[in-house]
Image 1 (tube, rainbow, N blue to C red):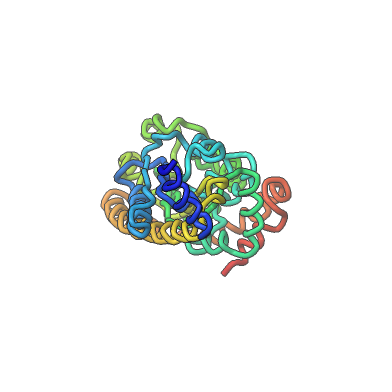
Image 2 (tube, helix red, strand yellow):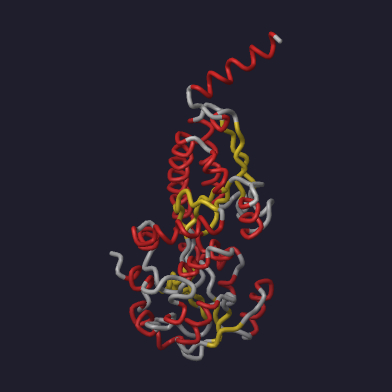
Length: 329
């Protein structure tokens, strides 16, 4: 009986002070799909460092890189069921689950002028109700949209691409994305689906003449050996985003929510700096192997794509959202 009183008294005292069990020691499991050398993992580890330091070790963060917990879809399901607290991954992937369809707009080719334009658009007042609705529908909370990713560029063989007219007749391997296919067809290109494992050989033998991965992939997979030009179209962008299980987020104290948010923002800035340094080195390397076109005529491309995605409006995302994003300064 004496032992029970000793235990009950501190618990009652804590509850009376408004300190919930969620303010006690806890573990946050955080998954992502990148390998341990990728800037995304550096950002995740920085998040771990900040949270553990500022909570004086009360909160521990376990990071699971390299798809150890599955791909984005699998991890989103685990968050919805409460089996996983956090994911650090692209905002594009939020559209892959039911309730997040509006975020397919983040993968529209040539819509976002640069990383800052994309980030500012997603953090704008007009996007807030879209985020709130998606969080409610998916059971996934967006904590911080912060962390630069490698934009997708364009490589070609035999001819450069400087403007919209240069896409005509271009045999290009693309991602199997409705918006990407729509863009390439509108520009007069001939998009084809080739498994990534077969891409190098397809480029070498002329099955396709072009492809649209980012600079890191072009360099790491030696695609510069079978391509002549790298064109910095930067035509599809993404932003690494810290997601949290919504139910678990609502169980957190306000102070812990604040700590996690601040740590996510700082970790995203750290990840961005790591990626920018990596990209600078990779572009320098590519210039020794290929002709790099830094400033293609993107305005001509955007003009050619005007209205190409109108039939998605009101279906995938709210009517007028493209126009609102385009108007963001």
